[in-house]
Every structure is written in structure tokens, then in C-alpha cells.
Length: 409
Image (cartoon, rainbow, N blue to C red; front, side):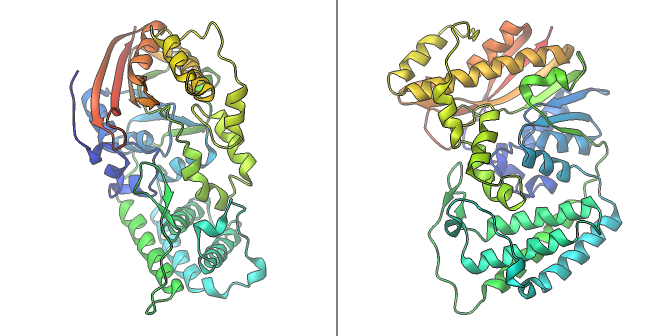
């Protein structure tokens, strides 16, 4: 077991912040491009087809696209699929020029849009996210973008929406000083600047940053699908994939929906809180809203099939504190077992497998995710299994991130 101790920010989403298109949006689901690039450099062979079944914001897909490696990426969240496709598209010079011109025109008229045509998302406690004037300006800008849909090509519209998402979060009260998202205290506006001036400046900086970050060419377009990682054989022919690099959600009840909500509401991927909970219920490890109620009614099957020796005892010890959390953990690994069963079927003989995973702790019970995933891989028939310590995480002292590797027999 090798290790890279310390906080190792370059091995997290923070390592993507200024790295070409990887930093278009700051998202916790994005793991470091440096991890992916290192694995591709060390192990990828000519003709490999890489699979990322938990594609997230498209880190693996983009790393492959920039290197001319074929990649299939799937995710169950439609916003993440949209973002990954936008990040990995090969934009023409004409599309980039059109994007820049339209962006400059839209922001100049953002304060002239009639209030009666402005639409605002029904996100819970909207005023907690944005100041009233910011909300109106964002709504006006989105209205203008929507009016362009029938006139300009989808790649141009998508670039405008990426820039809009950056504006949505940079002018919100959201804070990312925690491993997930929280809210910062509202600040009094400056006497020497107007909100609209700050918004215009941020917009222009985002446009320039997006254009500058698109210099790396896309050599091979990835195939990015809205799909469930537990049903891979309904999308991918058997024995197709020769390389897997992925990072599934961690079993820590930290729902990605929480952080993705502002983008998803503004862009129309969510209409209300019920939608958010229903989508999170479909995801592995999802617990937002109604998903928590569904987990509470889910029963642990007696033949759960998770081969880790201490699994049943671990679930029992968590249940002594919380029956809900015990069910949540059990369902997470039952779902992962279903996923790995499907993975075996779509991988070729000798395919290399790499999972970036993090362990968890509930009350005094440590959940060794890396060991449980390793046991699932071994039980399925994968061999040469290794667990490599990647980094210390920034939360509880016992929490680490690992790479679990294996080879298909």
C-alpha cells in the first residue's frame, strides 16, 4: 500500500480550478484531473475504451478526449450529463466567436428587460441564496439566453449557459469553505459600486476565462450518456471496455443534489423539491428530501450478497444509533454490488479497474468503503486487487481517500 499524505489539494476538485475546461464550474463531484491523467499515462494502451460509470462533471471523459482516447461516460443526473457534454465538445472558431459576441451584447441589455417577462426558479428559500436585485438581473439574463434558442446553434447556447451558471454561484451567498456547500453571512453592499457593475465584471471575466480555457484541442469525442450505473449492460455490449476510471458517490449522506440545486433549478432540470428528492432516490447514495423517506422504508435483504466479513456486524452497530443510517449504508453497498456485477459483464478480459473512493464514519463506527469495494470486486471475479492510500481528507481525522484497483480475469 503506497500513500500520498497531507491535504493534497491537487488530488481533489481544487486541483481542477485553473486547469483548462476542468474548472468551468466548482463542483464537489469533480475529482482531480491529476489522478486521471496519471492513471492514463501509466496504464492506458492504444485502442483502449475507457469507461466512467459515475461520470459526474466529466473529468475522466475530458482527460480522455484531450488525449485521443475513446471514452464512455454515464451519469444518472441530467445536469451533470449536460455539463460533461458541454465541457468535452469540440467547438469551432466560429462558435467561440459567436459566443463571445452574444455574451457581450446580452450583458449590455440585462437591465433593460421588462420585469413582467422575468422568470425565477422555485428553489426553497430563494432569498437565502440571492439578493433581490441579483435575482432580477439573473432572471433577465436567462430570459435573453432563452430567446436565442431558435436562432443560434446548441454549442453556442451551452457556452452561454455555462457562463450563466458561473454567475449564478459567484453572486450567491453560497460558500465552499466546507467540503460541501454552506451559506456565508450577507454583506452590506459597497457605497462605491453597484450590484449590476459587479455582475457585469464577473460575467466578462467568466467569458474570457472560458474562451482561454478552450485552447486544449478535443482529439476524440467521448460518448456521454444519461444512464444508471446499475444497468450498464442495457447500454454497453458485453466485453467492450478495457479500462475503467471512476469515482462513485461516497457513503456519507452528503447528497450532490444539495450543491447542484442552484444550477439545476435555473436551467430547468428541477422544478420543485419533490423532483430533487426523486432524482436523488435514483442515485446511489442519494438522501435528499423524499429519498430519505424511501430509504427508511427500504428493507435490507437477508441475501444482500455483500461479501465483506464484518458487513452485517457493522450495519448492526450503526443501527444501535440510527436504523435509518444503517439502512442507508446497507443500500449503498447493495447498489454497488449490482453495479459491479454489471461492470464485470461489460469489461474485457485483462481490463484494468480503478475506483477512487472515500471511507466514512457514522457515530463510532468506521465504514471501510475501500475494503468493502475490494471485497465486491474480488467476489465478482476480478483479480490483482490493491488498495492505495491517496490522501487525507479535510473532514474527520479517520477519513481518507483511496484508489481501489483490480484487473478483469
